[in-house]
Length: 279
Image 1: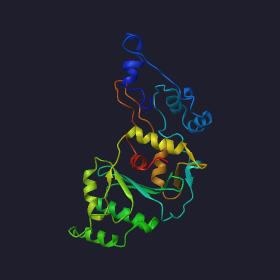
Image 2: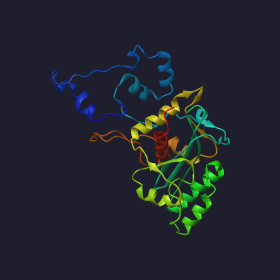
Image 3: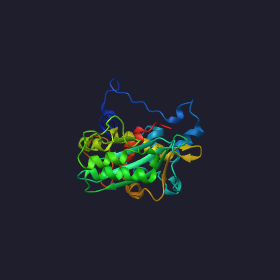
Image 4: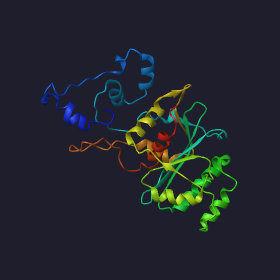
């Protein structure tokens, strides 16, 4: 149901009257039918979600996904004032490696509760891979200098000069976990001389959307599971305000997808969230 009205709906559920009862039997349960689930906890977790998402998750009903992808994102709730990152926090970076479309970078950290705080994001159009790599370095030097090795400047200087032969490839010069769209293999390879070694991101779009939505909706010690620093994430916030589901074609039997426009930072956020441990 969370994938929308896919072929499961159109071929089985909708046309259930066309099937022989001996061949197809459909069962549907609600979350609240589970006697081992605390009703107060269910209300708390699902209460911040959009009504249609609640229906799909709680009742197992198929829905047409429409409107905002993350309607539970609330700038009054999820935005926090800037603060200096404690040096012990683990850092995570999601990258959407665009060449013809904008390159996006979303930087986060695991906070003391196990949630995520996004401390910087940006996107850039028409830039060389070397320019994007340099901007990643500058981002860390400004906001997380403790994660930059002392040899980092020398590594970038040699890479800019094309002297890649003596660069230490065994460990990154920036101490963070980078993940990037698996289709951006050229970007990934060109990042290596600069000491940036991204892993292939999990491209489960609906899984990533669900993970981010849960982080927006859940609470950890009275605070949302995903928080965003003010003043450092303008591109991401602009996308979150408009990130919507695309209208599903009548002939389509695949899962619904968000509109493929102005979504670069949102994609990078999904990649980051799928790599980060579940709180």
